[in-house]
Length: 256
Image (cartoon, rainbow, N blue to C red; front, side):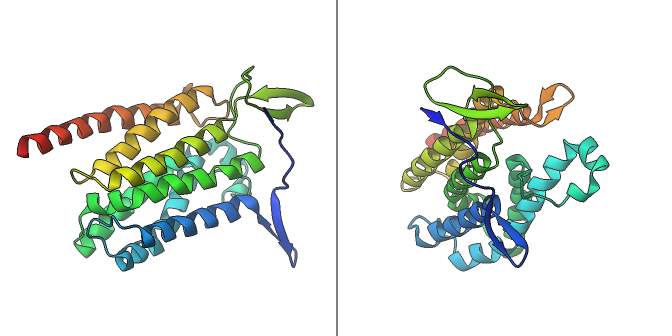
């Protein structure tokens, strides 16, 4: 199966000279779907939807800003020479780890103020985060980005670079599938959560392990010197939260 690119235009709607891009439309759609899933889910871990909705008013813009800041930092030379592009995200340029880091900081501050359990709130949110990522990654296909190295596998993506056609790993599709399956897995697991943080830890472990593989295939990763920064972050997250998860299981079994 060959995935063709350039079929869907980047612009979704043009109105009064203003272009609205599919990348932005999909991000907004992902946010709305994520919020609706949280509203109607049965496993709320004692979290009130109104508190979660209040959090969203801060979490959504802060996470998007954080994702952009993270991206800009690791492409700093380009943006120093193209300052007008700093706020231009119509062609992508949002790094998920930046959004996650800034998002977690926002959640911590919010929970301190509201006196809510941080881990309960994160466990309530992360299945929707995985679903949102799955939807948002479709924008990478429309923008023809986030793909990998050349491949001969049956499933591949056709791209044209410098006038030459080549077939590459559709890494955006890998992440769409993995995060959607992760959403289903976490939603099912939420019904039988054993301890606080279980759903959050599983999300981080599964996603970071998948991202290790995906980043090893990608050719457009953010770099720190000669190293893929997202690959480094994925390894750090995977190792650290695997230990935290195993220790939490040990504590749970010891106390039960």
